[in-house]
Amino acid sequence: MVYLTRRTEFSASHYYHNPEFSAEENRRIFGKCNNPHGHGHNYTLEVTVKGEIDSKSGFVVDLKQLKDIMNREVIDALDHRHLNKEVPEFEHQVPTSENLAVAIWKRLQPKLSVARLHRVRLYETSDLFVDFYGEA
Amino acid sequence: MKAYLTRRYRFSASHRLHNDAMTAEENSATYGKCNNPHGHGHNYVLEVTVSGQVDPSTGMVCNLADLDGFIEQEIVERYGHMNLNTLDEFQKLVPTTENLCLEIFDRLQKGFRPAKVEKIRIEETMMNSFEYAGGGELAH
Image 1 (cartoon, each protein chain N blue to C red):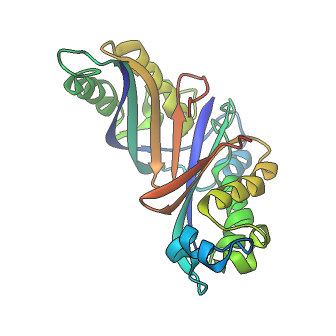
Image 2 (cartoon, rainbow over the protein chains, first blue to last red):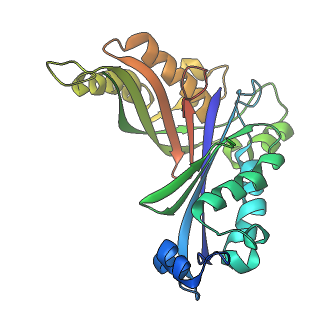
């Protein structure tokens, strides 16, 4: 089993707000992230897949295919977007990095046929990241 | 008490991805630019993770000087500033970074005695990396 990680970057804006909370609760729980005009991040995404090495090609997965899938399923949908307003997953869900990592996993997992998805690591800033392994 | 120690090393090498068992078209379709007959190079970063009990007298899992010495002599000397395709292990094996992981892990596991070699990770570029732990699943 060999693990391969590919990194990419995207920039997006969001704000944290749960309509089920009062305005005070939203402010208390989400702090500055509750600013209704939103704010943005340069996200770094690391996608790790696992598989056996193909004896003919020496590859676990064709990196170009993986890059194309990441571009199509994630970057095209999220880069330079407002997550709350333009990404369907966040119509009724707060776009925290936790929820975003899970959403990215769900977008990628069904599209990967050769190698299996092992981990999605999403950096919101260089000091803060979330790992999701597809666990319930 | 068991602890894990990871150290980073660097070496630069060239390679060409090409399998004689495939036609020119298949090679080109499979490897794209990496099939360029003159080869190309990378600045590889190698991360080696070893584990062991923390020695109560030294406070160490293993002496870093031993690990540095081994990697320098057995890995960096062997692969640094080399054309990987010219080495014995890649005469019948395509020098993808996956296969390079297997070769380097094998050399470490066979030769390095002071601590258990848990895992290696190789960055081929800033944007991609490969991990190998002897064939088993990674803990995380």
